[in-house]
Length: 424
Image 1 (tube, rainbow, N blue to C red):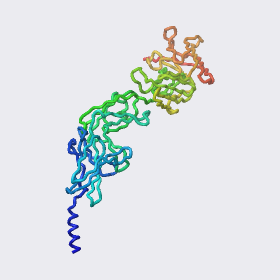
Image 2 (image 1 turned 90 degrees about the horizontal axis):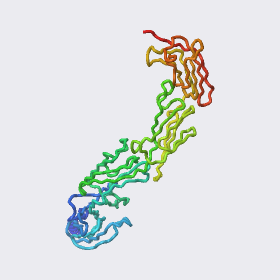
Image 3 (image 1 turned 90 degrees about the vertical axis):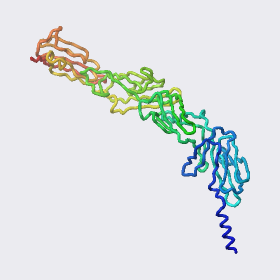
Image 4 (image 1 turned 30 degrees about the vertical axis):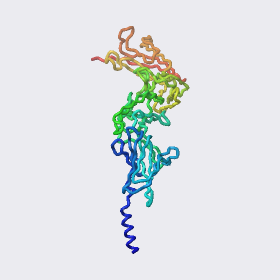
């Protein structure tokens, strides 16, 4: 008899409703199944969107149809728990009318098995809450852009961290102006949150949002730049073709270098930043585009320090000593022949080859000691004429005297030079 009773009881239990198969529903919600996206594989909960959440309805219909006790709660952001009791009732089903977007929990108890909790989150989409949020802890170097929609739920099954409801949204970012460097551009990015190098110019950011809840919208945010860029460009004044300046930044004293910031707002409109230039040899300047003359031989690493007048952003750059500005040693090299009137443009003047010359004197004499040419400029040469007329070919004599910029031993050289006229 006892065995038969146990079999009957087991048979009845097998037909009791399964609470695990129930869920909160929302009869008046916008159609479409949406779920949370909890991390770490936590079980997700339904999300319901209402066109008007005032007096929206949630329902709980467990499987089976027997009598249950229902306790409805809403999420408490202060305690981070679903502990605000809203309603208790008994019956085979239960409904709750709500007036605010929040998280809701219903505890279902059939009196025989372990009570079960069911959760959902509710929202009323509001297009006015769509916005681009720009900023992060250090906008001097990187800038974070994020689309906010005001629809936040919480990972109550884990750390209770906030999560933005972002269902099937497609984002397309663009900016005006577009940065010069492609890797700094936001154009073409498609994530809701993105980070880029902080812009140096005021920038208008736009994002187009396509979402099954919000539809198609375009958002714009005007950002005032606060970052600075210390990088600079330079240009060395052209030397004479007989001066020993090499390609790049190696040259002869006095070497005049024109500096300018690498980024400008316009053709001649520099950013309103504070500039400090250190030229290593004791020289300095405090303008965006200084012109500096290097006079002493050696290597120079120029440092540019830039700071923003209001944001406090500050940065500096100092290029490698060995590759920036090198002034060559004082020297004067003198040829022993030239060929004027023979091949124009090729060795048709008697000129020295020089570096870092401070004072210079060159006098040319003929064989009888008569002065036929004189100059105090090392870049100037004798063209083989005397009084505007072609000189006779033959041997002439030069006297060259020069001093350098660093107090080196003066150079004094004399000797013959051959004026050659080649017949054709």
